[in-house]
Amino acid sequence: MLKRKDLLGLRDLGRDEIIEILDTAKEMKKKIDNPALRDCTLGKSSIITLFYENSTRTRMSFMLAGSYLGGIVQDLGVAASSVSKGESLIDTGLNLDKMGVRFMIMRHQMTGAAAVLARNVNASVINAGDGTNEHPTQALLDMYTIRDYLGGFEGLKVVILGDISHSRVARSNAFGLVKLGAEVTLAGPSTLVSGSMKSLGVNVTSDIKGALADADVVMGLRVQFERQKNMPFPNTREYSTLYGINSSMLNYAKKDALVMHPGPVNRGVEFASDIIDGPNSVINIQVKNGVAVRMAILKLLYEAGASTDR
Ligand code: CP
Image (tube, rainbow, N blue to C red):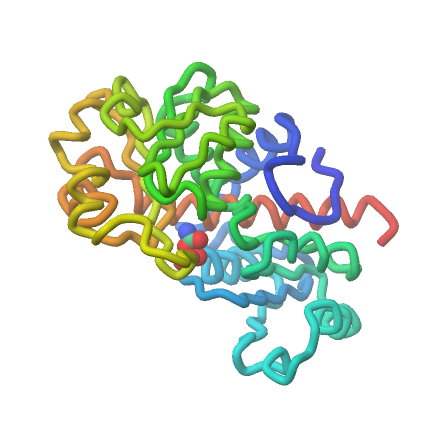
């Protein structure tokens, strides 16, 4: 059983904990389409989302997940909060703690910000993305989707393509997928993928066709222009020509390879539009699974807290 106060990353999550989250998410998914199955699992617990960076999928799916399980969900609205007057992250968290908040779900531009908050508040902190470090709930929903379609992870060839060096999604997926037995290859232009990432137990390459050969899963990543100091390639047209995936590139992967992307997608840059909307794509299904996985995490952390002195 998940016995932790916070969910900060997949680096420190065990195999059994990952499986428990995925199994629980399978149960939770039924509640998305059938409101009659929604209940008060979270006992009207207060849930606050604090997003210091923008989000559509993660923020909304956490807000809906909390609502579907009977939580009281609010968004801090960081831009309109006293953060703009210079209030520190820890002081913001301590104030929310005093208001009886049970869950703080935070995205922050600083690596380690979620861990800092978690050390200083009583609430359970869920990392919704911290700098270039981790995005654990994205990786868990990706893993849920892969397991749902392909039955497991052992021996699967998963290729993650694109802006690897700025990607918390790539790091969290690498931690989780390697733990569950998949072979992970990180591929992209040499300016966006570093050989040092081999320490995660993955292959690293700039040979895109070689990486795609016989892949079971092709996961594209957005080029994160907002995190670049210098342009890592001459222009987006050149990037899409050399590193983008179109139907002839996808032919190098297995015929039924899953096409995945965490979103938001730059159409025509990392993937051609016909790949995004094509028969191999599970990109929209990932979004739905994200609600189920986030429900599972809220439920399991709530139950873990109920069984310990908080
Ligand atoms: N995948 C993801 O984190 O999307 P958002 O930035 O919209 O939350």
